[in-house]
Length: 278
Length: 265
Image 1: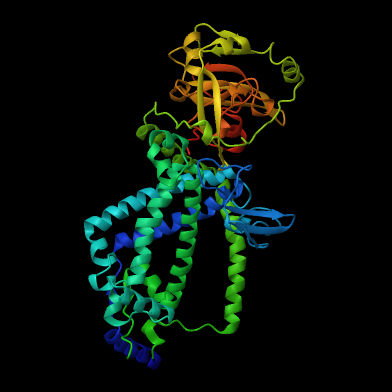
Image 2 (image 1 turned 90 degrees about the vertical axis):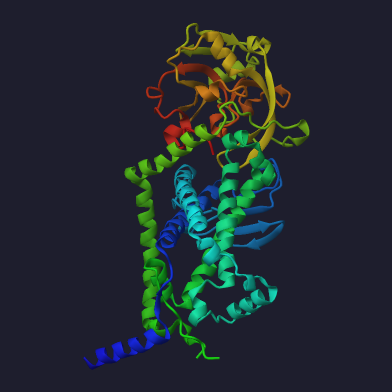
C-alpha cells in the first residue's frame, strides 16, 4: 500500500512537470504502421529481387557484358561489394553469408530461399499498399494542415544557424524537452519530409520506370531518370535511403525513450520530457 | 540533469543477465520468425492474396496506358555492344538439329487454332512477307536490359491472314526448346498480339537469328519482360482459354516457377 501511495505521489508530481499530451493524431499513426510494414516487406523482397542480378548500371542498357557501377558478388566463399571499382570484403554480410552465395543473405530476404517469382509477388502486392497509403496520407497532409502546421519548417527554423544548432544538439544526444518537445524538431522534420516528398515518390516513380508497359505509355519516365538501368540504380539508392532512415529513426526512438515514443505512435499520448535545467 | 530528458517514464534498466537472455531470445526469435515467414510465403491463402496485387497491376496498366503506345525505339549508336543470350540456348533435339543443319530450309511455322484458315509458312515465305525493323530494349525479369535490333513479320499480319475467330482471346507460342523435358511455350492477349511492334523476328542486329538467340524465329512483344519473348517458335495457336494448354497458366515460367503471366513490370 505504502509503495503504491508513493508511486501515485511521484506520478502526480511528474504530471505537473511533464504532462501527458495527445500528440500523434490517428491518421498519422495508422499511416505510420501501414507504411512501416510495407517498407519492410518492400526492402526484404526487393533484396531478393536484387539477388537475381546483383549489378547496377547507369544508362539505357546494362547486362553482364556491360560495365556496372555496383556489384555485390563472391569469389568462392568470399563475398565482396564493389562500388565504382572500389572493392570491400563483405564475407558474412553480403555476397557470401550463411553458406549461401547470394548478394543479400537468406536472413534478410523474402522469401528466405531463392525465388525471384515469389519475391516479385510480395513486392508488387505491397507496392500497392505503399502507393495507396502514401497517396491517402499525402492528401491528409495537405487537407488537414498537418503538413503546414507540423511538418513544414517554421520561418525561424530555416536558418543555417538554427539548423547547425539543432545538429549540435542531436550530436550530443540532447533532444528537445518541455514545450519544445510538443513539436517535431527541425532535423526530424527534414527527415520526415525527405521520406514523404523524396524517397517515397522517387522510389515509386523509379519502380514504375522499370515497367516496359509503362515506359511505352509514358516515355518521359525513362527519360527523367536517364534510362531503365539508371532508374533501377536510383530505386536501389532510395532503398538504401529507407534502410538508413530506419536505422536513424529507431536509434532516435531508443535514445529519446522507447516507451514514451512507442506509446505516442500507438496511442497518440506522449509525455512531455521535463524541461532541462539550464 | 541533462540525461533525464525522458522524464518519469524511464524503464527499469535490465540487469546484465536479463540482457543476455533477451539477446538469446532475439536470436532464437529471428530463427522462428524466418521459419514463420517461409510458412506464410507457402500458404495458398497468402499466395492468392498476393495474386490480387498482380491482378491490380495488370488491370491498372491496361487502364492507364494507351494500348497502342509504342515502346521506345533507339538508334544503332545506342545498341548494346554485346547482347546477352539467356534462357535455353539450343533446343538440341534431333529434330531441331536436323532443321538447323539445313539452315531451316525444311522448317515451317504453323498458324492454327481458332482461325478460319490455318496457314503453314516456310522461312523463305516469312522472309518475303512485309517486315518491320525496330531497335528496342529487352528487359529481363532479373533486372538487366539490352538494346538490339529486331526484324520480322508483324504477328497481326499473320493472324489476319489466317482469319482469327472472334472468340479467340489469346495467342499461344509453342517452341522447340524444353527444360528438363518440359516444353517451353508462352502466350499473350490480343492487345499485345495486334500491337504494331509485336513481330515474329527472323533477324537480329541485321543478321539471321543465331541458335543462341532463338533461330529461326522468335517473338518480340516489346512491352513485356524477357521471358515472354519466346524463342524457337514452331507454332502459333489462337485459343479462347489457356486452361487446357500445358499447366494452364499460359507459359513455362508461369506453370513451373510461379512467374506472372502479365509481365508488365
